[in-house]
Image (cartoon, rainbow, N blue to C red; front, side, top):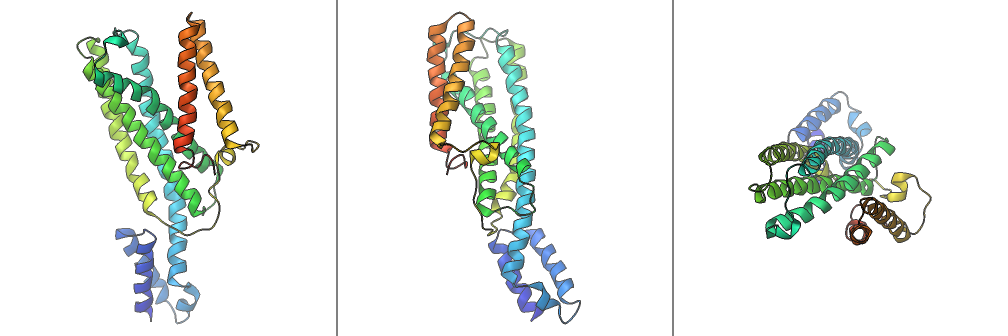
Length: 281
C-alpha cells in the first residue's frame, strides 16, 4: 500500500508542476514518514491533497522570491537606463528626423517598454509585500507570475532597444556614451535573464487553491471605483505632468502633443494588459 501511495503521490506532484530533484526529495521524505508506523498512511491524507499542499506553499514562496529578484534586476536596468538617458544629452544625439528606421523603432521601444516594466514589476512586488500568507489563491499566484514575467520581458526589450539605438547611431554619438551604454545594457540583460530562471520555476507550479485574484485596488488599498474611470484619471494625471514639464521648457504646443501621446499610451496599456496583469476584473 505504501508503494502504491508513493506512485500516486509522484503522479500528483507532477500534475501540480513539482518535478525533478524536488519531487524525488518530497517522495523520499514522504516514504520515511509512511514507514515510521502502521498508522502513518491514515494520517498522511490523500496523495492529491498532499501534492496540492506542497505546490501551494512552494508556489507562494517561489512567486515572492521571483518578484523580488525581478525587481532587483529591473532596478539595475533602470539605473543603466537613467545614466544613458542623462548622458545622451552630453553625447551629441542628432536630430530625430535623421534617425535611421531601426533607431526610430528602438527609440519608440525605449520610451514605452520601461514604463511597462516598471508598472508590472512594481505591482508584482507590491502584491507580494501586501500578502504574506503561507498559501495564496491560484488565481493570485498567476497574477504575480504574469506581472513578473511581463516586467522581465519588458526590461529585456528596453535593454535590447537601448543597445540597438546606441549601435545604430554609434558614428554620430560620443564614443564613451556608446561604450558605456552597450556595456550597461549587456550586464543588465544578463541579470534580467538570470532573474527569469526563478520566475519560470514559479510559473510551472499549479496548485489548486480557491480565491479571487484581486485587482489594482487591492494592490494599492484604494477605494473601489470603475476601473476605466481610474485609468482615465491616471492617464490625465500623467499627461498633465508631461505637459507641465514641457511648458516649463518653453514649448507648450509640443508638450501638449507629447502629453496626449503619454495619456493615450497609458490607456492603451490598460486596455491591452489590464486584464492579463490583474489590474481589472
